[in-house]
Image (cartoon, rainbow, N blue to C red; front, side, top):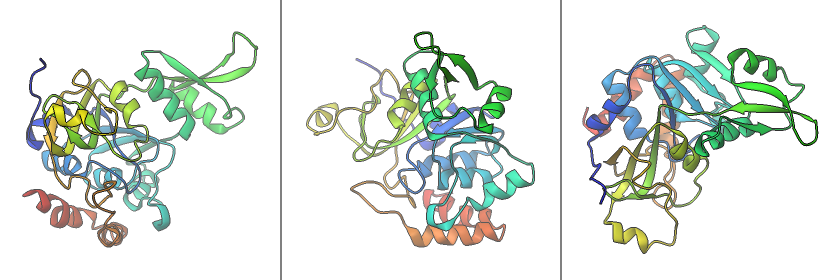
Length: 274
């Protein structure tokens, strides 16, 4: 039997070192692991490199907390509210590096790492200036398909140091179930060197077998399990609670005025007793 991996937020955050590369679950306003983001901010983590396809609120909060040195993403928006206010300002000021990517390439890189491969080929990006950017960064390379001779882009495996995933159910060993859209989270779980699951409910292993959904992670993949009910707030948790758009708009307004840290301390950290 595997050992219990239950941990507090404070204990789990010790698995994320300054300078680590990190990816998180969900997309823009859905299933961000906001309780863990709050723990990272409280712990004062710095120089993190953030990698994701379509990140959202959690990324801008980390930017506002001064936790980031760089970001690699296909898009970084607040959907109908425009671009991320804090991240955009920091990138324009040259304080955070931003490497623009494509959705397909990020997924390919995560898939390569999840499958234990060094790279994954993609089509449809040749002719873009992104090719030159990524060749300089060492993340893409133009190669020839050995069967057709066609030029394609090889995306280097994306293997984050840490993936933090908020799930609906998890047992104490790290077997978790995500209901509703899973996005790239199952690839992230298998691609990352370390995995932290925060969960709405901690359940017995037998209870997972009675659910109609397959496991998103197993104990083999996971390093820590944290009980965090409401842990995606103010982003949505499928089937449990919607996105709190009043709180999100409030954060946006604070961030546009350069006061995002006030919102983080008054609304997010305080929610978790800090």
